[in-house]
Image (cartoon, helix red, strand yellow):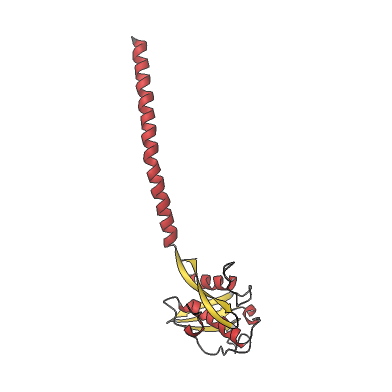
Length: 185
Protein backbone atom coordinates (compact mmCIF):
# COMPACT_ATOMS: atom_id res chain seq x y z
CA UNK A 1 0.00 0.00 0.00
CA UNK A 2 2.73 2.35 0.95
CA UNK A 3 4.52 1.63 -2.30
CA UNK A 4 1.38 2.38 -4.32
CA UNK A 5 0.93 5.69 -2.51
CA UNK A 6 4.51 6.71 -3.22
CA UNK A 7 4.16 5.76 -6.89
CA UNK A 8 0.88 7.66 -7.15
CA UNK A 9 2.40 10.74 -5.53
CA UNK A 10 5.44 10.48 -7.80
CA UNK A 11 3.12 10.25 -10.82
CA UNK A 12 1.20 13.33 -9.66
CA UNK A 13 4.46 15.26 -9.20
CA UNK A 14 5.72 14.27 -12.65
CA UNK A 15 2.44 15.15 -14.37
CA UNK A 16 2.03 18.44 -12.50
CA UNK A 17 5.71 19.28 -13.10
CA UNK A 18 5.26 18.60 -16.80
CA UNK A 19 2.12 20.72 -16.95
CA UNK A 20 3.85 23.51 -15.01
CA UNK A 21 6.85 23.37 -17.34
CA UNK A 22 4.62 23.46 -20.43
CA UNK A 23 2.50 26.34 -19.15
CA UNK A 24 5.55 28.29 -18.02
CA UNK A 25 7.25 27.75 -21.35
CA UNK A 26 4.25 28.76 -23.44
CA UNK A 27 3.61 31.79 -21.23
CA UNK A 28 7.24 32.86 -21.69
CA UNK A 29 7.08 32.89 -25.50
CA UNK A 30 4.64 35.83 -25.73
CA UNK A 31 6.75 37.67 -23.14
CA UNK A 32 9.87 37.12 -25.24
CA UNK A 33 8.06 38.39 -28.33
CA UNK A 34 6.86 41.46 -26.44
CA UNK A 35 10.38 42.06 -25.14
CA UNK A 36 11.80 41.91 -28.69
CA UNK A 37 9.11 44.32 -29.90
CA UNK A 38 9.86 46.79 -27.09
CA UNK A 39 13.60 46.59 -27.78
CA UNK A 40 12.97 47.38 -31.46
CA UNK A 41 10.79 50.34 -30.45
CA UNK A 42 13.53 51.62 -28.14
CA UNK A 43 16.09 51.40 -30.96
CA UNK A 44 13.65 53.30 -33.20
CA UNK A 45 13.14 55.98 -30.54
CA UNK A 46 16.91 56.28 -30.03
CA UNK A 47 17.46 57.19 -33.69
CA UNK A 48 16.08 59.73 -36.09
CA UNK A 49 16.06 60.23 -39.82
CA UNK A 50 18.32 62.87 -41.35
CA UNK A 51 18.35 64.07 -44.96
CA UNK A 52 21.86 64.06 -46.41
CA UNK A 53 22.37 65.65 -49.84
CA UNK A 54 24.56 64.05 -52.54
CA UNK A 55 25.26 65.02 -56.15
CA UNK A 56 23.17 63.54 -58.92
CA UNK A 57 24.36 63.73 -62.52
CA UNK A 58 21.95 63.59 -65.46
CA UNK A 59 24.05 64.09 -68.56
CA UNK A 60 25.36 67.64 -68.25
CA UNK A 61 22.99 68.59 -65.42
CA UNK A 62 24.13 68.44 -61.82
CA UNK A 63 21.83 68.65 -58.82
CA UNK A 64 21.47 67.51 -55.23
CA UNK A 65 19.32 64.63 -54.13
CA UNK A 66 18.51 63.88 -50.49
CA UNK A 67 19.13 60.45 -49.02
CA UNK A 68 17.48 59.57 -45.71
CA UNK A 69 19.87 58.07 -43.17
CA UNK A 70 19.32 56.87 -39.59
CA UNK A 71 21.44 58.64 -36.99
CA UNK A 72 21.44 58.42 -33.18
CA UNK A 73 19.15 60.93 -31.49
CA UNK A 74 21.75 62.57 -29.28
CA UNK A 75 23.68 65.81 -28.85
CA UNK A 76 25.92 64.99 -31.82
CA UNK A 77 23.16 64.50 -34.39
CA UNK A 78 24.38 67.40 -36.56
CA UNK A 79 27.93 66.01 -36.60
CA UNK A 80 26.63 62.52 -37.36
CA UNK A 81 24.65 63.82 -40.33
CA UNK A 82 27.77 65.54 -41.67
CA UNK A 83 29.80 62.37 -41.07
CA UNK A 84 27.25 60.52 -43.24
CA UNK A 85 27.64 63.24 -45.89
CA UNK A 86 31.44 62.95 -45.89
CA UNK A 87 31.27 59.13 -45.92
CA UNK A 88 29.57 59.31 -49.31
CA UNK A 89 26.32 58.06 -50.82
CA UNK A 90 25.01 54.52 -50.45
CA UNK A 91 26.55 52.00 -52.83
CA UNK A 92 24.52 51.52 -55.98
CA UNK A 93 22.57 54.77 -55.51
CA UNK A 94 24.04 56.40 -58.62
CA UNK A 95 24.85 59.46 -56.51
CA UNK A 96 28.29 60.97 -56.05
CA UNK A 97 30.28 62.40 -53.19
CA UNK A 98 31.35 66.04 -53.31
CA UNK A 99 33.78 66.25 -50.39
CA UNK A 100 37.00 64.23 -50.06
CA UNK A 101 36.55 61.12 -47.91
CA UNK A 102 38.86 62.47 -45.18
CA UNK A 103 36.85 65.66 -44.66
CA UNK A 104 35.92 66.00 -40.99
CA UNK A 105 34.14 68.38 -38.64
CA UNK A 106 36.57 69.92 -36.15
CA UNK A 107 33.89 71.90 -34.33
CA UNK A 108 30.20 72.63 -34.71
CA UNK A 109 28.26 75.16 -32.67
CA UNK A 110 24.58 76.06 -32.96
CA UNK A 111 23.26 79.32 -31.50
CA UNK A 112 20.10 81.24 -32.40
CA UNK A 113 19.51 79.19 -35.55
CA UNK A 114 23.08 79.68 -36.86
CA UNK A 115 25.37 76.66 -37.18
CA UNK A 116 29.07 77.48 -37.34
CA UNK A 117 30.90 74.52 -38.84
CA UNK A 118 34.67 74.24 -38.65
CA UNK A 119 36.03 71.77 -41.21
CA UNK A 120 39.51 70.33 -41.53
CA UNK A 121 41.84 71.25 -44.40
CA UNK A 122 40.66 68.24 -46.45
CA UNK A 123 37.48 70.17 -47.30
CA UNK A 124 39.55 72.52 -49.47
CA UNK A 125 40.78 69.68 -51.69
CA UNK A 126 37.63 69.67 -53.80
CA UNK A 127 38.30 68.45 -57.31
CA UNK A 128 35.50 70.52 -58.85
CA UNK A 129 34.79 73.73 -60.74
CA UNK A 130 32.50 76.58 -59.75
CA UNK A 131 29.29 74.55 -60.08
CA UNK A 132 30.75 71.64 -58.13
CA UNK A 133 31.91 73.90 -55.31
CA UNK A 134 28.47 75.53 -55.15
CA UNK A 135 26.91 72.06 -54.91
CA UNK A 136 29.38 71.00 -52.22
CA UNK A 137 28.55 74.05 -50.09
CA UNK A 138 24.82 73.55 -50.70
CA UNK A 139 25.05 69.84 -49.79
CA UNK A 140 26.55 70.72 -46.40
CA UNK A 141 24.18 73.64 -45.80
CA UNK A 142 21.06 71.76 -46.91
CA UNK A 143 21.98 68.77 -44.74
CA UNK A 144 22.25 70.98 -41.65
CA UNK A 145 19.30 73.27 -42.34
CA UNK A 146 16.94 70.29 -42.54
CA UNK A 147 17.27 70.15 -38.74
CA UNK A 148 14.63 72.39 -37.13
CA UNK A 149 17.13 74.24 -34.94
CA UNK A 150 19.35 75.41 -37.84
CA UNK A 151 18.36 78.11 -40.37
CA UNK A 152 21.75 79.47 -41.46
CA UNK A 153 25.24 77.98 -41.76
CA UNK A 154 28.68 79.60 -41.53
CA UNK A 155 31.64 77.54 -42.78
CA UNK A 156 35.17 77.83 -41.33
CA UNK A 157 38.30 75.85 -42.19
CA UNK A 158 40.79 74.95 -39.45
CA UNK A 159 39.20 77.53 -37.14
CA UNK A 160 39.50 80.45 -39.56
CA UNK A 161 37.21 82.23 -41.97
CA UNK A 162 38.26 81.48 -45.55
CA UNK A 163 37.23 83.12 -48.80
CA UNK A 164 36.26 79.81 -50.43
CA UNK A 165 36.86 76.08 -50.47
CA UNK A 166 38.04 75.87 -54.09
CA UNK A 167 38.21 79.48 -55.27
CA UNK A 168 34.63 80.02 -56.46
CA UNK A 169 32.05 80.34 -53.65
CA UNK A 170 32.34 83.25 -51.19
CA UNK A 171 32.38 81.71 -47.70
CA UNK A 172 32.54 85.03 -45.84
CA UNK A 173 28.73 84.99 -45.72
CA UNK A 174 26.19 82.68 -44.10
CA UNK A 175 24.04 80.32 -46.14
CA UNK A 176 20.44 79.12 -45.90
CA UNK A 177 18.70 76.16 -47.50
CA UNK A 178 19.15 76.22 -51.29
CA UNK A 179 16.22 74.65 -53.13
CA UNK A 180 17.46 75.79 -56.57
CA UNK A 181 20.06 73.01 -56.66
CA UNK A 182 17.68 70.16 -55.84
CA UNK A 183 17.03 67.38 -58.32
CA UNK A 184 13.60 67.61 -59.96
CA UNK A 185 11.18 65.07 -58.56
